Structure formats: C-alpha cells, structure tokens
Image (cartoon, rainbow, N blue to C red; front, side, top):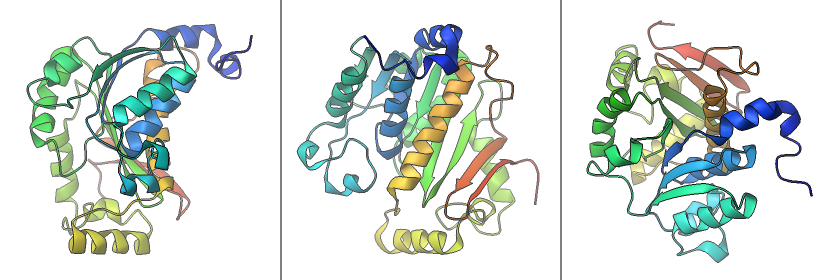
Length: 267
C-alpha cells in the first residue's frame, strides 16, 4: 500500500525520514502561517508536535488560512487542524494546548521540545514574547518565526546561543529612516512599494494588517523548509548554514525577489 511518504522518500532517504521522526516541534499559533507550516511538515513526515492554539475560525480568516472554510466557521482552529493532520498521518503524535500560550505555561510548553515555532500576532502575546529568550537559552532550542507581507514574507530565526529578538530589532530600527509603518523602512523598502503603502494605510485607518493567501502560504512554506533544514542539518542533504539572526530572509513574489540580509550591515 502506498503512503504519503512515497514521493518524499527518494529525496529524504531513510536517513532523513528517521531524522524527522524523532524531534518534537513546538508550534505556538495555527493561524494563516502556522496552519500552512504545520500541515506541510506533517506531509513531510515529521510526526511529533506540541501545538498551542485557542482561536476560533471566523469569516475574515478565509482570505488566507488553509483550514478556513464555510464548514469550519465557528469551530476551534486546533480541532480542525488536528483532524486534518490525523487524516494525513494517523500515527502522528500530538500534545495539545487548547488554552493558548501564556507566560505561565510557556516553560512547560518548550521543555523537552527540539524546535520552537512562534507565530503570534504582532499586537498580541507580549508577555510570552518577553519570556521566550531566557527559555530558548535554558532549553537550548531555536526559535523560528515569519510574517506574511503582501505577496511575500520575512523570516527571522533565533539560535539559543545567538542574537535574541530585542537586539535584532534594535539594530534594524537604528538603520531605518522610519519605524512607523508595518515594518522598519530598511525592511519595508525591500517589498513592493504599492503593496506596502496599502498595508500601512489600512493599518493606520483600521488597526489591522492587510494580508493575502499568497503571503501566508509563502511564509508558512518558507518556515517549514527552514525548520526541516535545521532538523536535517547533520545529513548530506543540507550543506549550508541555517538562517539565524542577525541574518534574515525576505521574499517578495510581486517583485520576484529573494534575499538573505544581515542586520549588522547597512545598505
């Protein structure tokens, strides 16, 4: 009987499949980016996850969230994604945190995991974000995160022995002529100009950031790929460094650009 791994196996080989079957990937958030990333990794063969999500699907989610359909409106996002994941791989191992992440449960959530994927909205979870760096160092696990920007994404990851978020953003802000939009100008200028103008205008008028399904899919896919590269870093398949801060990656499909930048360098 064929399995969902049959077309992946020739690329990963048994060594890669084995390497992906053991680590625990902790995912904080199954929104437009997290949902794409989660299901992509399930299909790839990663089988051990710890997942936190307390959201409910509502109509605005349908423009970008892979689990959002008329039939799932009003349903807990966690329930929908768990069903989808188990439909792909019935042997998947899941630890679920339906109450969402908080400063009180973050340590228990991260303890024993190998990778932390943190995808919390910009305007939420400040207590969780503040506590994250000390726990990354304590448990020696990396943080992977990305954001959907129009028709593209920005991915910023943090190694436990490397640059933490506050230091990274201080560097980026210091290099920027403006920090009033959705992104500091040193980043926003790398994206399609009209797209960024419209995102910033909408945010100023409504307090919400405009998104597209393409940006969300790109963000989730890029992060799934980089997490996979990290988990396979000791196999022959991966022959490059993983992108960790101060380096970060920007992809914009409207401009057809992709680049890895370094926050310590100007220009």
